[in-house]
Amino acid sequence: MRALVISGGGSKGAFGGGIAEYLIKECGIKYDLFLGTSTGSLLVPHLSIGKIDKIKELYTSVSQKDIFTICPFKTTREGEVYKSKINHWGIIQMFIRKEKTFGDTSNLRKLIRKSLSIEEFEEMKANEADVVVAVSNLSTNRVEYKLLKDCLYEDFCDWMWASSNMVPFMSLLEKNRMQYADGGMADLIPISESIHRGATEIDIIVLKTNKPRSPKQGVKNALELTTRTFDFMLNQISNDDIAIGKLQSSQQKINLNFYYPPRVLTEHSLIFDPVQMKEWWQEGFDFAKQIGPDCKCLE
Image (cartoon, rainbow, N blue to C red; front, side):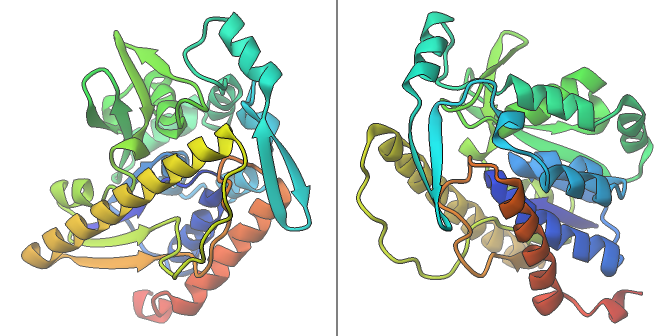
């Protein structure tokens, strides 16, 4: 059984989409299992039925307003560098509404429903390949894996949305008397789950570079400190996911194929710039073509 695993990474999902396009469209690799966390959960359903052009169009045209109804930060761009600061009025609005988070991503929920039709969902259900997304259950402190074939349409849209919501900057899903958030808070790169489901060869798209990184500049406000802290925590979670996955694969003789960005794409993965994401998609495609498998061997 061959699996495709795509990690969390916000807007960097565009780079992962480019890699997936090359592996599926150019190399013709057939996957039995698609497993995604956070932005990966938005990619894998469409990839499972070959709707690559559709998800590519979405990832290369989406903007900040398509994700956030109320954004907890404001961004400015100086050359190729983005800077962010607290959106005080937005956060005040959230407090007035007695919301539990600093930001509101209702627009993302609408976008998910708009981009995934009921007909496509039924096609995914009928497809031989399984699609699984990871969510974090904050009520039980456990990660849950939602199999598309076990879900109704509206429920699966909720799970995709929950998996993509990095709280407290994004919305919290309250469902079945439980509270759910970004799957990356528990399992950023779900390698172990793909092994548990029987995968024997796994292509893993990790949306963070494995190259040495230079020290970052000091934080300038509370928002930067919070995002920096979350980035540190997610980096440690991803390191653990990879280490555990490698250990399991060595014990069970499972082949793992890793794809890392060759550079730091961004320090602000919650900033969605369509021009930038279009460039990342092409960069991911070209990168996979350069280091990926010899497609002629897969024909």
